[in-house]
Picture 1: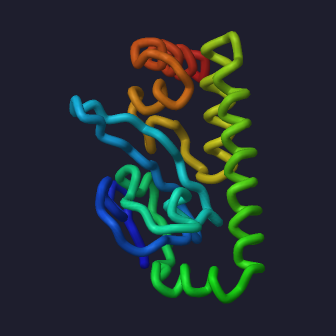
Picture 2: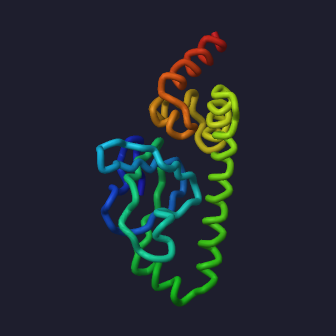
Length: 169
């Protein structure tokens, strides 16, 4: 299945199949009880989502939206869980996949622990470039989302992006 930028793959609270991202990037947004929208994750090629449903079914934790054009494989939940029961090697594959996601989260923590906001932004930009070649992070994320991802206020992100574009001129 092809998903174009801005299209929704699934919505928070729904249930359904699992998905394997073959190419592109997805963001996972979560709406809280007060209506606040928060970017909680970015999904990169090779990941099977939702992570919290890899071993047992659960409603979708957030809403998955394409950041760029994506190729997504739809995986039948019934087939997925039946294969887990029959093929224990599949559990090892899932453990390795989750281990990779934990390592990615450790990189995000490293980004957040940078003292300099400019360095946090630079590291996020480099990380994104390793998956999707975009001229500017603002092409795929809003300034609010960038700030949520690296622990900065939108105003700070705006100032840093302006400073970067001024430095390039």
